[in-house]
Image 1 (cartoon, helix red, strand yellow):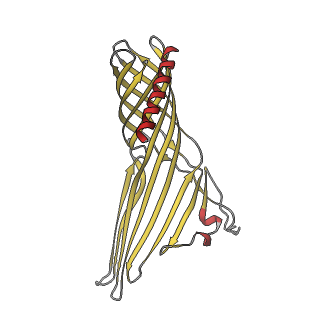
Image 2 (cartoon, one colour):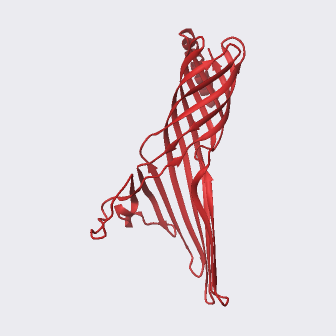
Image 3 (tube, helix red, strand yellow):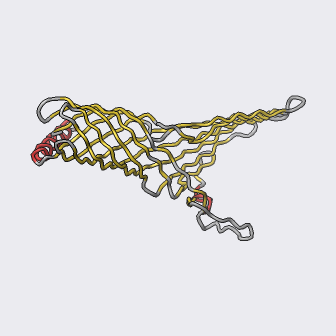
Length: 282
């Protein structure tokens, strides 16, 4: 059944391709891998040791930045374009499947009466659908380039898990969903398309410069020792709205039924990638 579906989609794609080529249009489809560049600060991880068993007691603290981009990973691409002798227009669609970035921090507390060990892990999971209207320049020998804007529709979640052992043991789990806003950036590529007739194979190097500022973060999972405790949280505990600025007055009592407010921040989705695929009519 899966093979029949694939053959059906392939035949439909060929039919659409022939119609498109006859109208001066071309189609592209391919895939590749993107490096998350430039890397920026995503989070930081710590190693904390508090030891009161020795005399004198001491504490050590190590902090390490985590630098990456959510644009890293496999990418799937398709495009519909209109060709001229030298210049053309193209609208591309890119999909980046889910990938993850994990950040783990450890805290250890030692005393003469007890020992407590804490491991806190944040796992960021992201994916994105993007649309890229571009101008295209091509040569008779197959080299081409394109440049334009990228409209991104990212998805981002954060899964937090705290595990403790020793004199105080247990687990706490939370999941936060980031939503709102469209990401706007720019993109470009250079490549070469080779082959005969209407079908060609292309290879290209591309880049995307894109950041995303979500408008809201909502806690959708909250468990303590495996038991769902989400209903115990107020609206202000669960939902945070991101703004360019806000004012907090200690004379005013915070309403637990209102969303919390925090400063807006940007999540990086930039990348540099290498892609390959086929094109019809280019």
